[in-house]
Structure formats: C-alpha cells, structure tokens
Length: 339
Ligand code: NAD
Ligand code: WQD
Image (tube, rainbow, N blue to C red; front, side):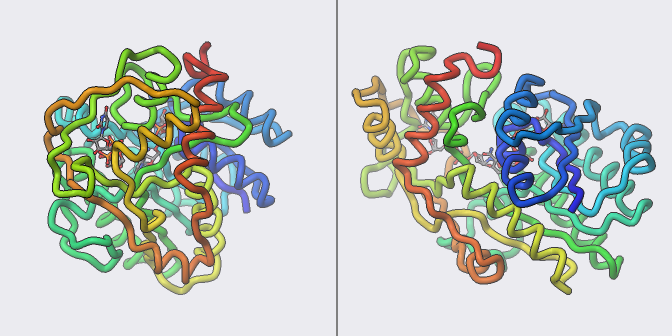
C-alpha cells in the first residue's frame, strides 16, 4: 500500500516507518517538526535503503493538506501527528485541542474528499481514565481522561467512530498504546524528548548518560508490591509491528471501527524499571523518592487478547530488551539527533 504517515518523524512514527518499508509498503511522511528533528529522516533513509518523501507542514493547515491529497494518491493514512505532553496540556489546553483536533479534521476531510478509506489512529491508554478495572479492555465505557491531552484522544475516538459509522467505505483502527519505550536495535533512531523528559524511561536514560543528576521516583507509598506505580511498558518495535498488522487487517475487515489495545498485559514498577536499566548499563543509578505526581494511577496494564487474536500480533520483547535498546540509542546519541 501507499501509506501517508503523519508524525512520521516522531518517536513512534519513525520506528513504524522502518517496519512499513520492510513489509513492502511505500511510505510518505508528513510532519511539521514541531516535536522532532529533520535529522531523523537521514537515519530512516539509511535504515530502509530508500528515499523517503517528506512534506514539512502543519496538518492544521487545511489548504496544504488538501493540496497534498490532490497531488498524490494514498491507500491509507497512519495518524501519529499530535502534541502529547500530559502536563503541558494543562498549561496550554487550547493549543492541544486546536492542534490535535484540527489536524485530525483536516486529514479526515481530505481523506473523504479523495476516497482514502483506511485510517489508523494513535490513541492511548489514558482514555480508560481512573475507574476502569484492570486489565483494561477495549469494551470499557465510558471513556474519560484527566488531562486535556487525554481528552483530545477521547474526542478524536468519538469523531472517527462517527465518521466511519456514516460512511460504508471507511475503516478506522483506534490503537490504544500503553507505555511505549525502547529504540530500534541499530541504536540510530530512538526517543529524543525536547527539554526535561516527562516520561520515566527517557529520564532514566538521561541520568545514565550524565545529562541529569538523579531520577526522582514519584511516590513509593502506592498500594503495589514495592509501593511504586506499575505500568505496561511496550517496546516501540513491538508497537510498530502492531501498526503493520492493524493496517493489513483494515484492508480486509468489514468492521467500520476496530479498537485494539497495544500492550503486553504485564505491569512493571518504577523501581523494577530502574533496576532493569541498571542491569543494561552495568552500574547503579542515583535516585531519590519524591512526592506522588498528580493524576498518576497506581497501576495500568492492558488486556491485549483482542489484538492478539484479531491481528495475529503479540509482543515479544522483554523489559531487559527495552532497557538495552534504549541504552544503545542514548549512549550512541547522548544529546539526541543533534549531538
Ligand atoms: P512525537 O512527538 O515523537 O511524534 C509526533 C510527531 O507529530 C512529531 O514529529 C511532531 O512534530 C508531529 N506533529 C505534531 N503536531 C503536528 C501537526 N499539527 N502537523 C504535523 N505534524 C505534527 O510523539 P510519539 O511519542 O511518537 O507519539 C505519536 C502519537 O502517539 C501521538 O499522537 C501521541 O499522542 C500518541 N501516543 C504516544 C504515547 C507515548 O507515550 N509516546 C502513548 C500513547 C499515545
Ligand atoms: C511512568 C511511571 C510516574 C517520571 C504517560 C501518559 C500516557 C501515555 C504514556 C500518551 C509513573 C513514574 C515518571 C519520573 C517517576 N502517553 N515516573 N519519575 O504517566 O504512565 O503515561 O505516557 O498517551 O497518557 O500519561 O508514563 O513515563 O510519565 O510515568 O517516578 O521522573 O513513572 O509516576 O508511575 P505515564 P510516565
């Protein structure tokens, strides 16, 4: 298929581009580089051995989006583009609602106009909110989220479901990612957060490489085995494979909307992750324990059975793989893509 990958220069998009090309798809990237570096494209071309066409513009621009679809033919769209920092979304909510919703409207509008029917969307486990029972299952309702970021995902899930229900040609996959970590085994592409990392794994990696003094563990008095929060960390390569599987499935399914959890089904605590990273690096890493972070759930993990059964997909990487691959990327690129 000829696949338009929005946000293809970003962390998850870039890893998915490599696997799409390996699976025989033609890839076109659109990215504003609002949260990524153009340098990633050269790395992707080296990994894939292909020239990758890139359109550098903001998808909230409806005219440019329309022109792209008028000029080029696509079979499918994978829509990663969006702003994703939970804390920042509470500081600048309007920017989050505008960017994430308007980019989706403009993309789906152009898809409808030009008869592009297959859409894979990056949703998130955050849509399960505070009250869903563990493990999280796709049939849980009502969706809700405690952040403006998360609410953009809930809203977009509703928008895409409504659009697909009204159009017999359209097939939409809503992929609910759990906690993506890790990097490509080559160590040439990986997560490159701008500023102070919000997420656990890149923070630990920056402590290990000497960019940060120590990790602060956000609370050790949760009702879990070691008192720290537990999450379903999924290797970005397993996650990327889930997109290739979802795209293939969309091409044959009769379901207008398919929802799939992409997770391992296993919880790992903050302390377990820190110790796994220490094994990867071969030394202890400094940390202290601070107060809880507002909004954190004690535990979150997927029931991946639906994705396993319907996509013929399952995760194969371990926590130690996630740490070893993150460390290979971080140690080879201590300051990210512009080192
Ligand atoms: P990322 O920030 O690395 O990648 C997103 C890319 O989209 C960036 O390259 C950015 O420049 C681009 N972008 C943003 N707004 C755009 C716009 N209006 N027009 C064009 N390009 C735009 O993030 P990621 O971690 O790769 O996440 C990809 C998607 O997955 C996002 O939608 C995110 O919300 C979702 N998601 C991420 C996680 C996670 O923990 N990383 C978890 C669940 C869901
Ligand atoms: C994991 C654990 C922290 C940093 C977020 C979004 C979610 C999804 C994935 C997009 C928690 C603890 C963290 C640190 C710490 N993204 N931690 N010290 O919050 O599970 O999920 O990313 O959709 O929507 O909310 O991930 O990596 O921020 O935190 O102790 O410096 O690590 O308290 O328990 P989270 P995270």
